[in-house]
Image (cartoon, rainbow, N blue to C red; front, side):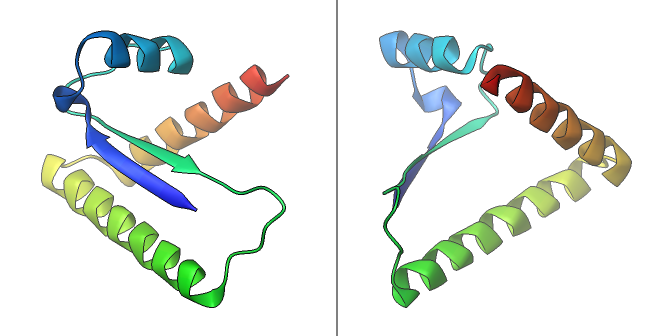
Length: 93
């Protein structure tokens, strides 16, 4: 499994338009895009799992720090996540 994370502000032109079209929403410069390549049906080894877990912990810690710095209520964060999950489920069908 490989992943990349890019600041939206660093993505311009056709790549940005393609991402926005694929995601179905306008991207803002203060956002980041994370793309992961998954090998379906292949179990990752323990080292790969550990590395992925640590990356996710880092992303979660960074998000928590940003939420705290901006003074956003956790209830608001939960509402946004719930809305995103609901939208993803609607698109799946």
